[in-house]
Structures are given as C-alpha cells and as structure tokens.
Length: 153
Ligand code: 4NP
Picture 1: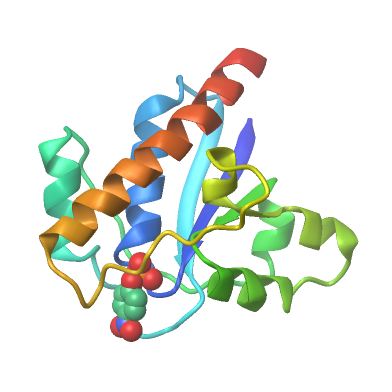
Picture 2: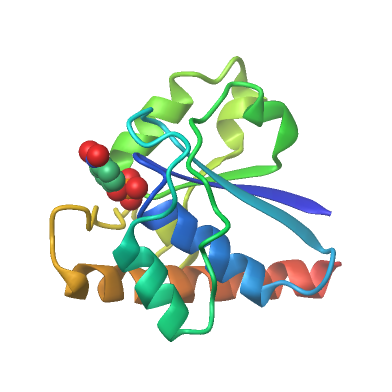
C-alpha cells in the first residue's frame, strides 16, 4: 500500500481537496491517503466551506476530515509527501532529518508540469472561482498519481 500525505498551509482548503480527490480515484486498498498543514491555525477544523462545496459538486465528501499539523513522524509514516506550493516545500524540507526524508517531498503540480515547481495558488482569501481552479489542477495531478498507483498495485 502506497502511503501519501497531501500538505498545504492551513489543511483546510487545498490539501483536504487533494486528499479527497486522490481517495476517489485509487482502487480499494492500494493507497492510504491523508493530509496535513504546515501551520497550526486551523487544527481540528473541518475543511473550508468552499472546498466542501466544490468537492460535493464533483461527488466527493470532505466533511469527515479534520485539520492537523504536519509532524516530523510523518516522514516515517508516508512514502510520498505532496506539497501544494514553494512555501510548503521549504517548510517541510527544513524538517527533514536526512536525504531520504527530503526525497519524499514532491510538488504535486510536477506530476502535470515536471520540474517546474509550480504553486497551487492559495484560494483562502479569494472567491469561489479560485476553488474551482484549484479543484481542476488537483484533479489533473491526482489522475496521474492514481493511474500510477492503480497500475503498479
Ligand atoms: P490552505 O489555505 O493552505 O490551502 O488550507 C489556507 C487556509 C488558511 C490560511 C491560509 C491558507 N490562513 O492563513 O488561515
């Protein structure tokens, strides 16, 4: 089973969507998917209403999720740690104990645009269209991740 952690700043907008979308695409027990934030502001909170809404429009339920903060133990628990942006990348890599930890940290949009280290824009202070944009980006990236997992067992 491939263990994947999705990471953003608050764990209420982008990474809960990435978690829900990837879970909806992987077959059965082929992956364990979770999400976390680098910041502590929203620990224990449900995803943002706008993330819940765009997911629901696409048949995905995020309402059972609760925000948590990234922990250095996550380097042991997960095979891949997908970050949403360059700020998340810097934060997580700064906690890595060794090269193996560091090598687990990936930009999620590099699945679609290899090597470009592009950001999934933080939609928190914007309107609903930002969430639709984020959903579409994550859907494309998660499609690629899920196909790889589903093909490789
Ligand atoms: P996320 O969005 O990192 O995609 O969950 C944010 C949510 C909350 C805040 C920032 C980003 N905040 O500053 O409270």
